[in-house]
Length: 111
Image (cartoon, rainbow, N blue to C red; front, side):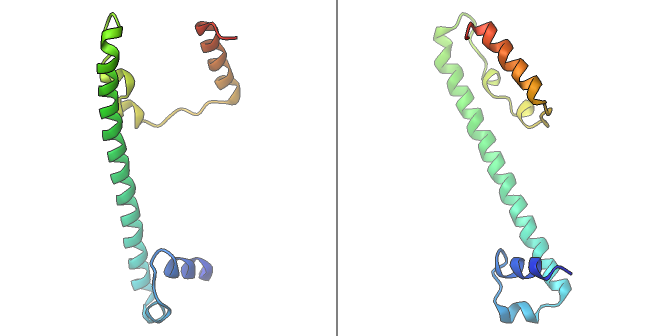
């Protein structure tokens, strides 16, 4: 049993008083921890959904702003596509990353 973690969790995120903490059974304490973890996960998902919504709005605005300046107007999904953004990203080695940056620099004429 990791008492340090238990006490940090009880008095930190759960904000329990000493009196309340010592009256709890281990099962009750674990139920409180499960509820706290659920709330944390719920809040993280809510923030992620709001970020996706805001990025979608910004991509629509970007497509409108750039449309008069392009021969073929860009679609909002050209700027941000939530389906692609939420996929697991492939890890690259530092060498691969440097190669990609070098290729882009050559293509753009940057030295």
